[in-house]
Image 1 (cartoon, rainbow, N blue to C red):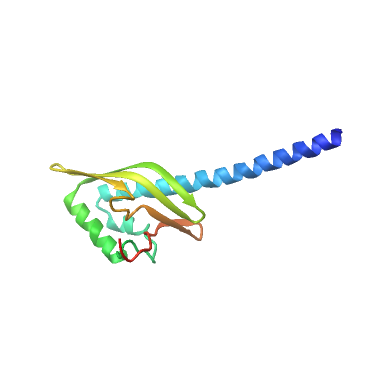
Image 2 (image 1 turned 30 degrees about the vertical axis):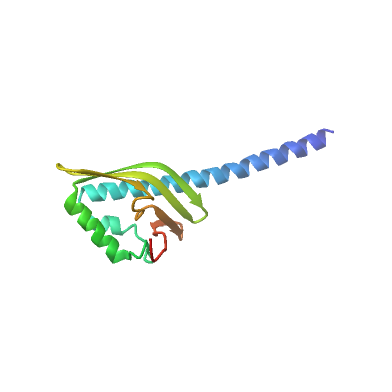
Length: 144
C-alpha cells in the first residue's frame, strides 16, 4: 500500500514539475516580448529607427508591407509624434508564434493617436521566435 502511495505521489510530483516548466517558459516568452515592445517605445522616443528595426524579422510581411515599408511607416510616425506608450493588454502564445494585444498611444504637443492592436494596424503585434530570439514577424498576409 505504501508503495502505491509513493508511486502516485511521485507521478503527481512529476506532473506538477513538468507543468511548472511549461508555465515558466510561457512567462519567459511573454517577458521577452514585453521587453521588445518596451525597447521599441524607448527607441521611438529617442528617434532611433535602427533600434526598432533590430527587432524586425528578415521575412517580415504584414498586409503587403515589407521591412522597408515598415521602416518608412515608423519614420513617418516619428516625424508626426514625439512619444509612444505601449500598454500590453495580453499576449497569446502559440508555440514559436505570438500575438500581442495592446494600446499603442502616439502623442505630440498637438495630437494624440491611440491604436488598439492588432485590430487597427497590427504592424508590431505579430511575433515569431527563431533560434531562441523573438522578432516582429507581421501577419504574413499580402492583403488586409
